[in-house]
Every structure is written in structure tokens, then in C-alpha cells.
Length: 183
Image 1: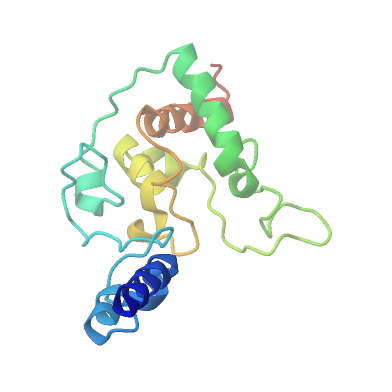
Image 2: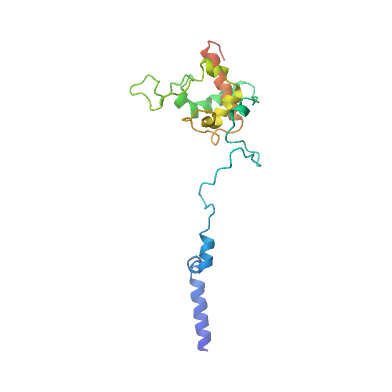
């Protein structure tokens, strides 16, 4: 009878214990808990450069040779230009300025006192930028650093899908306006 009481008391104590604290004190259980893996809410590893996504997602960067060959899949409609303007004002205007001249609020060439901290923000409307292909501008939106613009942040994770081409269309519209043309 005493054995049964001890057994019942042991089972009650065992049931009342938190298995996380008890089980992981055993050696091989502890190694299972503290293995190399991606923890919840941790940043997963970046894919290997050049990896083709199997989920239908878009790549995070393009080499210059591939970027120049891309063809703009969006026509320059009012809808595309309006969406491109919104995306441009959200992500690009702070550096490149409202007219795309490289004179945004954080650019050192904005004419303000004191000037912004970033030197060398490129104009998107000068003759060099106008000669660039649509694919090149698309590649800059995805990952400017991969195309030789070291300080430009990557926007591949923020600007997605057709928004990228809409920004290209809006930049082309800014270039046309800078040359004296209308919308």
C-alpha cells in the first residue's frame, strides 16, 4: 500500500513538472533543443546569389548583362505613372528629389544649409541616365549596389511586382519633363 502511495505521489509530481525544464536536463535532449537551426522570429539565411526561386518570386539582384536585356512589361499608362509616382515618392524622392535631379533632402547637393549627409546621389534625368535601358533602371530598383551604386539601398524586398516597372515608367516620365516634354 505504501508503494502505491509513493508511486501515485511520484506520478503527481511528474505530471506537475514542466517537461521543458525537466526533459532538457537530460544530455541528449538538451542537444536537440540547442541545435543549429533557424529560431522563430530570426532572420533566415539569404539565398545563394544567382539562385532561381521556386516559389515564383523575383530575384533579389540582377547582373548588369541581364538587367540591360530586360524589357519593360508595363505600358506607360496614367495608372502606371500614378502608381510609379507613389512608389517613387515613398522610396526614391528622399535621395533623388522630386524632379529626379539627385537633390533630395538627404543629398549633399540639395542647396540647403546644412547639406545632407550623402554625397554623389545620381541624377535620374541627366543625359547619362536617359541613355540607360529600362532594365538597368529596374535592376537599380532591385539592388543598386550590384550595379555599382554602393550607397544605394536594396529595394527588392520593398518594391515588388509591377511596382518596379511602374517606377521605371515614372522615372522615364521625369526624364521627359526635364527635357521640356509633357506627360
